[in-house]
Length: 210
Image (tube, rainbow, N blue to C red):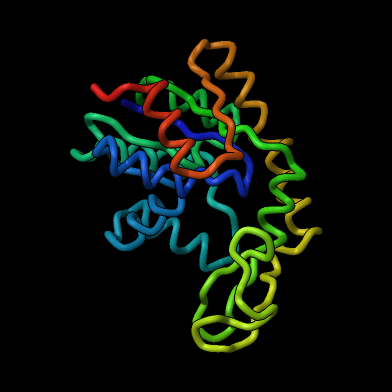
């Protein structure tokens, strides 16, 4: 099965993709993973990406598309894959159609207010990096890590203003893909609010393994 996962930041796509990849024995391919792999392999495209990232610039659509093409040609992706973070725009989606057909596009649906609650409640230990959540996984003592007793802090990208901006960018650039794929009759909506185990169960029911 060849999947595309869509959904806003905080929808839990990455967590579920890892579970689906294990369950279906197919690779979970994110744009970050593609960039890192190409850079590590020092392919010609990888060297280009390294130079762009080192300069603090964004990787262009053309290069991203070629990297995806390169990654999807590898042996482990021939029987299926999960694309997470690509495509992000309609032009990328149109380019992907020229590379490989996908079986299903899964839209993990969650309201913006739920995303804000999930992400803004995250707390991270300054010392050991352990993650907590004020509502879903609070520490025993507020603001203090259970493991090493160091201070917990809020990452800059978990602050309300940053989350709101990320959601605005997603709605503007990526959300149009939902209608694009719905019109092609390949989109399935899945509620991203329940626990990962419940979402995985629903996913496996909607997409039986071959």
